[in-house]
Amino acid sequence: MGYLQDDQRRYHELHCVDSTHTSQGNNGPVTLEALLMNRGEMRLSRTERYQIASVVASSLLQLETTPWLAGRLEKKNIMFYRRDSDVLLEQPYISHLFRSTKYPQTAPERSKTGLSARFATRDSLSSLGILLLELCFGETIESQHLRKSHLGLDGQPLGGTDYLTARDWAEMVYEEEPALESIIRRCVFCTFEEKADWGNERFTQAVYANVVEPLEQLVNQRLEPV
Picture 1: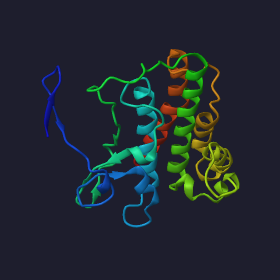
Picture 2: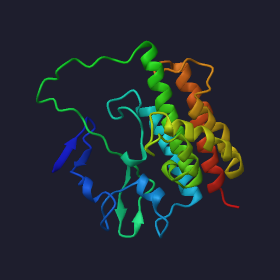
Picture 3: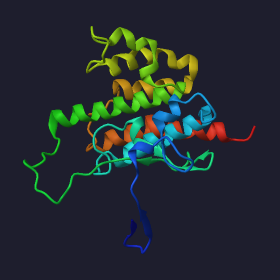
Picture 4: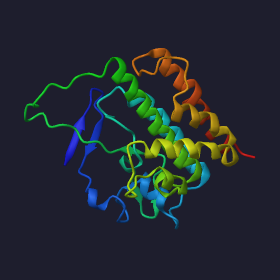
């Protein structure tokens, strides 16, 4: 569609992504959800999953208070481009829809403050914890047998189904990857001493120290030559 020029005279390509082809075609984008569900040639290695986990956690910390990330960070919105048979895992993208500015909104959008902001922060961290669980095991939360006991009478998921499934699934992390247990539990249960608020600098520092930095260290350890 063209290019956007920033203040440093760098050009950024602008193009449309066809959502009906997000997991098809040789050079089209593929979602993290599709990669986790794949059992064939595109199956992610453990090191690749940990690298993605590190990038995702860092991105959440950087983007949560910006317009680039609204609400939960979900696997269906994390995308990678392909180059022939290769998936460019080192360059993840976040798919996001912005509200149109052409027409006025029916009501002004209120900023999240106080108790609602705290719940929103806990919700976004819990969603990160679920993503880290999926990347730890290389499986989606929807495929877990633990999930069945948290479904409604009609077999459909309820509001707390993912959280309750993650709570139970977190008990199995130590056997899979001991280094991830504390990281994942902190996210799922939001166990930080500081008030859970992205506007609280001490809280964001705690998230970096207890989630982002340990993930970076884990990746570096796995990439070090033996």
